Image (tube, rainbow, N blue to C red; front, side, top):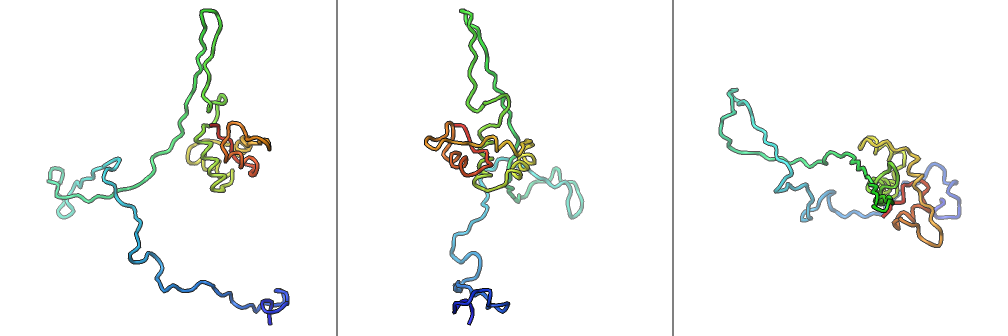
Length: 194
């Protein structure tokens, strides 16, 4: 008798507990891709973004110069990689003009230019995605931005961007995700202006 077939507590079973039994049944199939299943692989593309020709300079057999020798064939290999990622800084300049009446009018800034220096909507969306969807700690997201993009983001910046919506109305200039995040997650760059 043990705790599984009587009213005894599990602590009374001692150290001699039975090995757990798997409820999974053997299918009889080998692990991995099954015969006839559609495979997924990295297929070459017909029109690559860049082609780099590599030509042998000397013969591996006798060492003669091959610069003017005819090409008899090619072996192709394609490397799929990410392009270099860098931050684009856009400066917005609002011109001020004086009318013939003497009044000066200043042009308005776009919605993403909220201050003298600020983070753009794409960067804020990336931070929101990494923190909210991927559950990466803000400190690690700040480290990722510094290492990958060269952007020094303090870990307090996402906290300052937190949304505190009213209970009856949705937050102004925020997406539905940011309203949910603003209530449930204390540290996220949640408000992404539309």
